[in-house]
Length: 402
Ligand SMILES: Cc1ncc(COP(=O)(O)O)c(C=O)c1O
Image 1 (cartoon, rainbow, N blue to C red):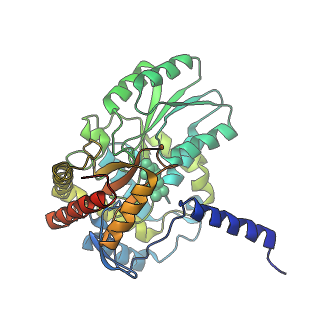
Image 2 (cartoon, rainbow, N blue to C red):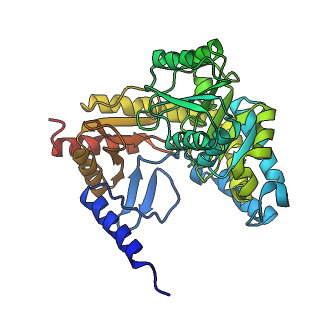
């Protein structure tokens, strides 16, 4: 039987449109592990400032070795869903390590943070609840709330990014709700800014609300020992629920988790649909992520190196006349204005052997297109100097710097 050609033609037309709108994404293929410098097909060695490999653990020998050993011990596959065919001991060990690391009594792993967020909101939200979310929250949080809204009679709202007065207003307007849940990113990925956790906690307590923080860009990154935004703000152990990824600082492979009270994780085991209807993390990935947690616990100096790189890079950009958005995180956006300039700068940088992604409308508002630099503890000062020099050069070339 032949394929449905009308359907295929429709898709092909849409791809043509994406290309003519200049929002079509081209994949760059790597032939070496994620690291400060990688081998990119057709380009040779490239310096990367656009990866979430914040601590350089993607290729850390102990992390890689743990995966290889787990392959030998547990084999390649999980075989089915956890409650149906058994849960590997490495999942329990990983979850114990994650809870210890982020300061909660329990944790439950998922195959991605996307899955964790979606599984969490849809499981805990009930009829009559009110869910309020920061306007710049990650797409996985937005979709998780959409799902909860589709399957329950809950009420939802979005508060202006970081605007706590707006949040309080919305909580007050919904004080009759059965329960109130506040969802926020710990670190906002397009801005590199942090949620104001101490104030959010106070608001949550004042309004009898549950605070949920997605710390995907902060676990292993923020706080003196990498325990995330709660450690950074001195409120470790006080956030009701933390979600995060294993796909960034914690080895960068894949996976996510929800951390909180034991009853919450038990309820996710009982009721969250990704747990009930989808396989668990491959044991190799679970073992590598656990080795990553152990590595960070044993080497807090790696987190310090990252923080020093952040300070050095931000200062060097300012010195070069560039204007990064202020902040303390390793996400350093340089606002260039027009989407076409951001894309052009990114292309010119890649021609110079430096991979930094440019983001424009509709990912960010009109007129705020940006180059988003992401730093790693794996970067050397030479790497950072080279990147700043190249960014300065291309900024002059496109006319945003004299
Ligand atoms: C804040 C946030 N939450 C969730 C995710 C999803 O992470 P994962 O790749 O583990 O699904 C990301 C990834 O970009 C993220 O930045």
